[in-house]
Length: 96
Image 1 (cartoon, rainbow, N blue to C red):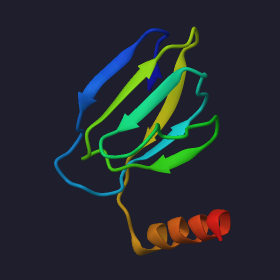
Image 2 (image 1 turned 90 degrees about the vertical axis):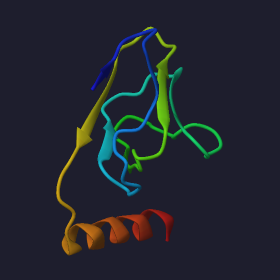
Image 3 (image 1 turned 135 degrees about the horizontal axis):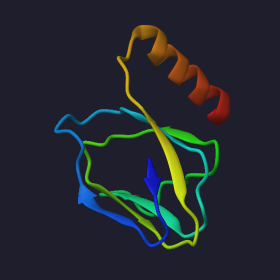
């Protein structure tokens, strides 16, 4: 997903299901590029190489106030018990 310098994506929802999916991974994330989720303080703390499971059924928006292209990968898939266990182990490892 490319968001060019000065580009923005107006507030929207991607699905009417409220659940953590898909995975959004920042390949780069220039300073001044922000993602806002409705009902949450601040911005999603993206950094290059960092990934989040997001509830895209929640209203969200983007703006790129930098002079660089922003590139993210959006990963869709079918969640399974193994996937859920992997997410839980990853979270526990990083937030112990």
